[in-house]
Length: 158
Image 1 (tube, helix red, strand yellow):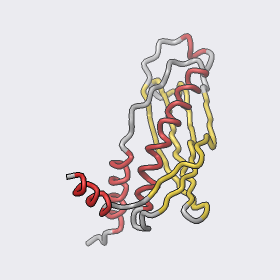
Image 2 (image 1 turned 30 degrees about the horizontal axis):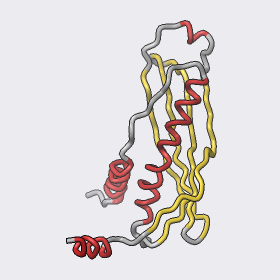
Image 3 (image 1 turned 30 degrees about the vertical axis):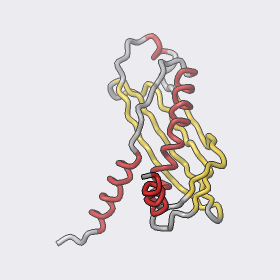
Image 4 (image 1 turned 45 degrees about the vertical axis):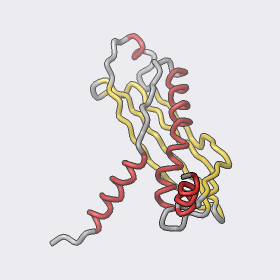
């Protein structure tokens, strides 16, 4: 049984994903109505956006930047806005070119997101607001949606 599992694993993709460095590339926080906003009873809504960019830094080395933008509003008024560009330098080898876009858009953001979530929570708390605890994100599903959207956009219209 163990030999069957080993043989199945050897047939799988033999790539490696390594982390060289994780860092905050850029961070901003705005509370345009402070300090008056602290005296108000709030029931705000969160608008959350993600963006992902990858840069080839050399043979099998890539920088991936996950941008997380959180806009918290009370009605149409911004309570606060925080944006974090959480970046990492990754060694990615042995996967084949056809797999690289998916790895850059899913595996790397999955590694970066907990760091971005922590940075956002810290800066929001330091800004005088209650913790903002972001739920986990399924980057695989987001990537699949983006691939589908691009395919639909590329299809000829009759």
